[in-house]
Image 1: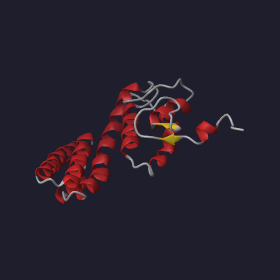
Image 2: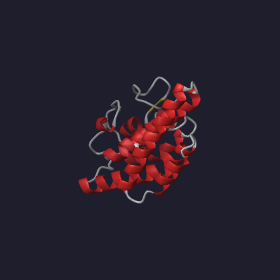
Image 3: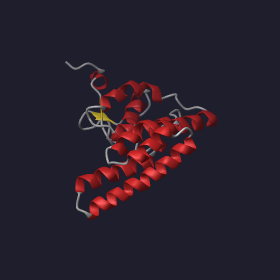
Image 4: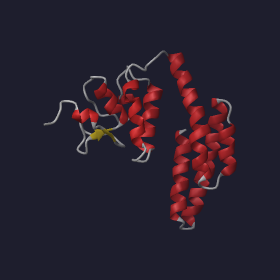
Length: 175
């Protein structure tokens, strides 16, 4: 006999938005957070779809991580499902969160992606960013450089390198 909470205890986080409870037993992190908070289920395709009690920058960041993480790593996000509801704060706190997330994404997440396509100079510039403005400038340069690598790879029919470089350009743009 199935317990009343089995669907929650065995929840799977999946990329993208899903009809509740998802044909494959799960939803994205923000949809799971809506359900865990006891709110009526809703499809979440962007942070703008989240309830007002969710911090917009935290919800957007969670959504980006959820969709970008490999399937094997995504369950690590379950620890944050119960933290999204009630995370909304005032304008100053949300701006501080946005600045922090921007800086840390550029300093920690973007460099290994750039190193992976041979852009070690851009990766190091990202690691050395000290302010959100520095981080945004480094990410813009990295996006341009990665786009150039992707374009050259496509022209040379080096498809895997081109795909990796295009992914790096998207990651830098997202950051």
